[in-house]
Image (cartoon, rainbow, N blue to C red; front, side, top):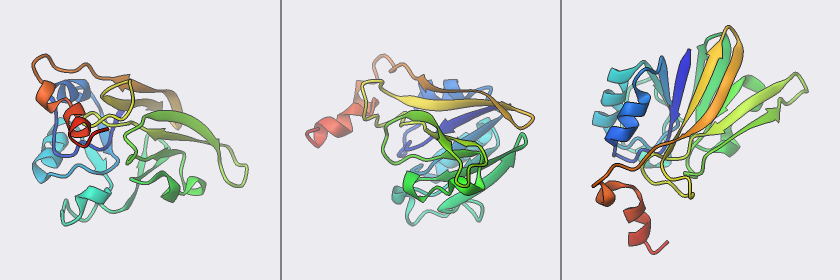
Length: 174
């Protein structure tokens, strides 16, 4: 099963992002989707689980989208929370966060010493804050095991300089 991980799309789904998500068995979104139309578009691509981000205030994506979301897929317990510090590694096998727009993948010891937890922040395909540029995460899981986990770098679209995500930071002088 291929699970594609996104966060911090902030109301912009580029064609590069949509193309990268095609073929996913499930999409996990770690918050700051910011538009119901984007949420519905992602749901058309694959089944989706999403948590609320700090910029999703006032949005009603439905009863399954909360600040902390837990999903059981492919024999693993998955947890999504926009803020890394609010993840409960004692109750999951895979922990997904967002907010920082900085991608990482790492293994953490499970509290209580009962194993390890994969922790991932997919970065942002819209407003990246690293030299990697726009990114998503991808996890392949099968029968209770993680086969692979990676950060996928998305190419910027030609002619899409206005909407490549960097304009936001240029505007605010970063």
